[in-house]
Length: 88
Image 1: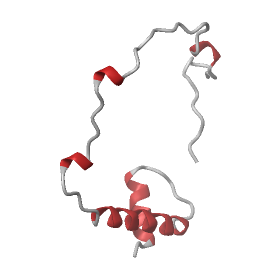
Image 2: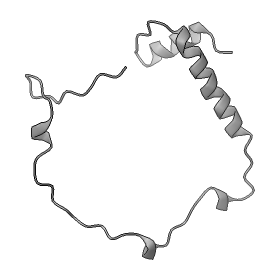
Image 3: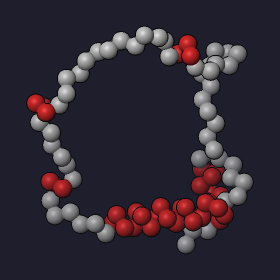
Image 4: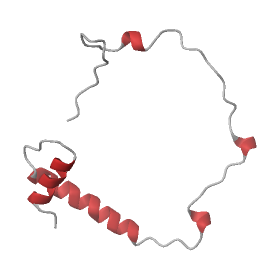
């Protein structure tokens, strides 16, 4: 079982202030449970892990110019840095 102090420690490691660490306990336990399930999967050969595609079956890369500059349409602050949305 994941404890509150472990969630707080993870928050400290990634330098994120968590206001309510208890609400992440169930999510982290679900992630750990999923990885435990993945560990039980057995592969009998490497063919299961890779999928080969012949070069003849790939599409041709084509250069298609874009009409306007994307940088000109982004939100920028006073120092001309691009402003990204806040992560929640």
